Length: 252
Image (cartoon, rainbow, N blue to C red):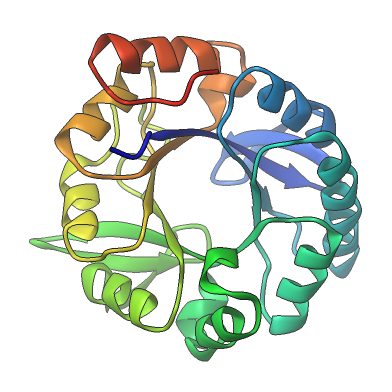
């Protein structure tokens, strides 16, 4: 059985890790390179950076951060946010990212997924899906979870896989920030539809939420942000909670 992965996620704006609600009231939490290095040392299986700076200056800042991080971090790390073209993917991979995530651009231009997969490999191509429940279905949301595309999230997950994505980063808009646990129903629906690995995101409030999603679904990894950044819990505490529940986890 493949070991489950624990992944801290860092939202980066203008060179700093930030935390807020719907990008409002952002607080500076520290240097992303140092924080990523600390998580790597403390047992994180992977790191994800999400660039929330939309300006060209922000993109260049992110490239510099990726380059610095590659020198200090010895676990795989994914960079997403603002990736709109194959040139963006190439730039981030050349800077040292192991994988590049795409979200809104993949929805508006699905061919970007295929091009990235064919040029750089499926293992480098991650598609982020933000999904919100509407009745008995989930819709794909863009623009930070605020715009309803009307696209069925389960069908989109199938298409993403068909187009060559190597992994899906699945965030539940309904549970994100609520801290009552992952969206089990959504996660299970996507995982049972595709064969590629899925990362569950949105809703973590305590370590026990990780073994819950791992036991209820066949998701490959769980992601969290604020519980790690605010030193509420450590990666090791999450891994200990998983081991107590009999989840196969990588040793920190």
